[in-house]
Length: 177
Image (tube, rainbow, N blue to C red; front, side, top):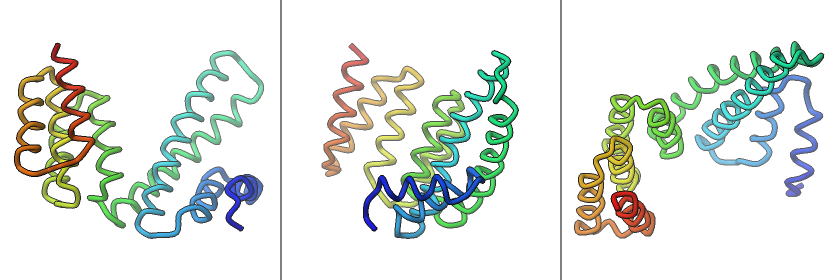
């Protein structure tokens, strides 16, 4: 029953619907809520992106399976929208969801969205180191290395003793030269 390979195997053959497969897989591997809902959303998002990329490549190459892959990508994208709403309803400020949204905003260079997400992390007070790390990453992404360093050093001086903060400080200092 706790064999993860068997759980993935069973999920693969449990349904023809790719969304249902991911839901079944997550239900069999993540017990606690709201984490299960958030992990389901993130797995759907990752799968949708990967399958869309494959569908685009297959279409460009004129491969016979392109239509089926495109259909699967569309179904997964539909599932992403549905499960995004569920994840937000379950726990909008969950650190995993906050981190994923922040990474997406930084990748798009949408610094105002990243700032709003960082503020959500601060207001939630779930993990004091998360908001500090997000703020320093936002500043570093904007090329403000001195400010990013100051945020991390201040966090350490105020008692946030987290190895990730130390690593982030080392990384920012290295990037700053």
